Image (tube, rainbow, N blue to C red; front, side, top):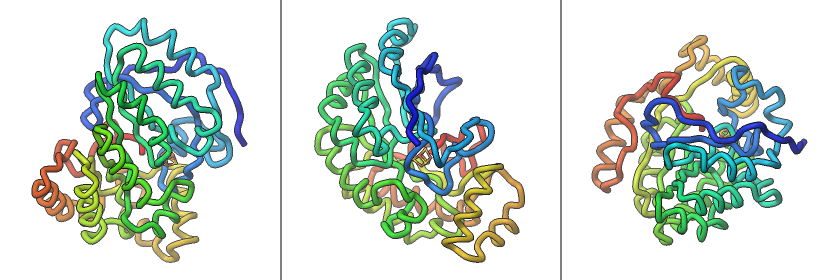
Length: 290
Ligand code: SF4
């Protein structure tokens, strides 16, 4: 169900240095997400979103909050959007909060980093170009080259092929593009054929950087939901996960080291930056939400 709410605050300062996306601030215009990725960390109890797969809350006063909060910030920096929800999920077409927030960011001279899985971002190219006079980048999360697999693991998102086409169009418009290659689901997506195909296609689309993580996180409600989807779509795989990871939060791919080495070599051959320090298993604090 879609519910309209009024938020008290919107923009939060990013603590420490954001080694993934270089963010200074974060904002969430919505709470909950229509993309329903089977691995989504936002289902975890610590975020307190009770009905993550049922309700999406729309912060109807978000743009007013943004307009009043930004002038009070001591530093003009990069504002990130796209953690714990996708700023271009289908309901953005109706509510347009992301679009209006980008207008405010452009007016007030801040930069932006958009993390999304949707080609709806193309609608806002003119505003992103204006923000780009300060700094604008779009990262598309892509975890598989296979559209059929994407339908299973990211059922509410546009197919990976559409995301690549969007990256290509953004790059043609001079907007800096990146791929968040994370998570890489162990035993499902962590093979070289998948990873190399993503890097090759990224190169064709003019992508400047890829932020990889060869593994996933799992905890409480997130794990329970993911295992239910495994039972439905990958019968028997839950047992492999349980044996490999037990109750661990950080679940790196058994192939992580080999994948990372080959990935780094392929990226170097295309002069694609790896926008992350070369650690294979980030700590919980370093792991961005995807
Ligand atoms: S991973 Fe991102 S796009 Fe997918 S459901 Fe979670 S917040 Fe939405």
